[in-house]
Length: 392
Length: 101
Picture (cartoon, helix red, strand yellow):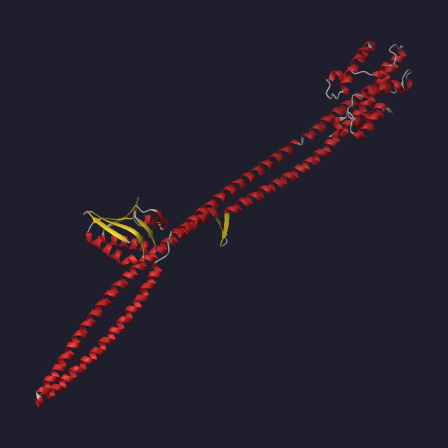
């Protein structure tokens, strides 16, 4: 039965090896399980009873050593994964912290760009723009109000000018009457002189009247002077009021206001856009933080994997213990055992390992130094061997 | 300011063209007095051909509006264009009187 199995194995091995060298990495499990070996082919299939026992013992010994090697390998892989997982977890933690800080910074920025400090209060920029616009409108309203008061004031001045004109008319009238009085006094004086002695008293009266007329004349010209000065003063006031009431509201001035309005709107819009972008950025950071948190949780798979591998190792150890009890210490006592056979069998198993270091370590367990391994080790340096996995 | 007026018994319309500025305050005062004397409810300043106005001009419009309120007639500004329209909007004259196209 053993013999026939071996014969079949020999046929299938060559195929498998051929595939291997073409760089195939995932053969079906069943093919790996049935793999025999070229080296084994050299050993005789015709065996006596004691030799069969020896062969079985050889196989058991290789099996035990292999399983022990595998347990060691599983242990070190588990450790390797644990180390890397914990360093990954650390990195993810610091990423999560950095991400949280980033989202905090972005949040602060989003607030800062939307507000401006006005007398220790934070005022939203949108309100500031409205304030500015309201202030401008208020300013225009006040200018218009001031102008209307100015125009009203000039109406009042116009009225005063009219009064002054009337006064001027009155003064003219006084002067006209005065001239007449003066003339009458002169006539009275002439008539008094004609009357001789009898008119002497009348002449005195006429002289007094003429003197009065002169005084009135002085007064009226004084009044005329003063009225002229008032008129000149009011003229000055009139031009001052004109300056107050007239504010240039030409196209250019309005355009300046329009530009200010457009610029303010542009500024506020841009600001809102920036705030929106920052908000999205903060959200992205928060999402990143959450994703990282989830990744950290998922990294705990390593702990479960470790426990399962430990379970597997414990089961293998138990199996080894059981088979050790069945054939205790037979390795030395049985005849027909062969180091060459064990090494040949181990070499075949070694071919299963595609990772050069693993293969070398396994072969070292059995004291094998194969030509293939030696050349593969040498090739490692040049990187041209088939151990693609090591290259990453 | 160039001025032409129409009165049909119920509405007094003043066609004001050219520039309305401080120098026109005398003529404008007379116009407002005439409007009050016309004894109508509606007065319209037709401003289609008014090319520019300064703050004194705006002040005169405010005085006209005040006079209307005091004497029982309503003032409407009609057809303002260009700089005149902009400045009326900017000074929120729509809050003080009726403005139509």
